[in-house]
Length: 205
Image (cartoon, rainbow, N blue to C red; front, side):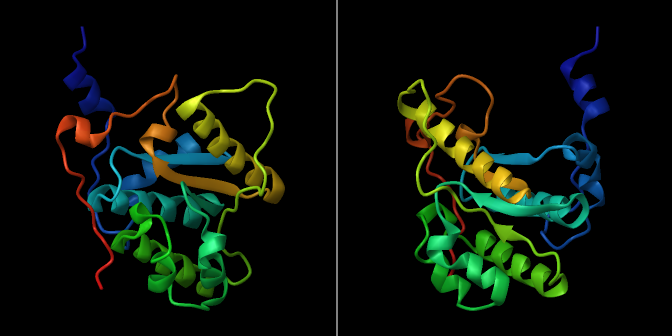
């Protein structure tokens, strides 16, 4: 009987590169799994972590540069409200200042690096840009009502699906694992309940 360790050894792929601007060769085994998807969700086990954010950035690069994804949805905030969509499209504004108005868990050096990369990508591909997804002004109405976290998760999913259908873009959704896992909510345990203080990489002043 095959052990869990043996299964992992045969089916896993080592992440050789760690920095966002490094080659994507080690991530390419992921591409066939998501190539036909219209929406791919990247769920971080913990927010504001340097390593997980860098891996997510590299996956965004893979999906945009090689698999035709053209919209990025940030969970929990509206890049249009912040002006980040204008910055990545035109270069207008200071992304550091714009991110200063975002939710605290997006005010990180890693997200700033992602925003700079999106702008750089658009400068290189003015006819085929990448952009931030927007969410509908009014939430989608459903016949059945959900409570608590389940209602929030359906609202988030509805918003991303609305943007995908509106634009036809393939969308990358970057959020917390609590809102991207498949199953019955709640999916999360607060770090404070475990006695753990979250690490983060705040944007340096």
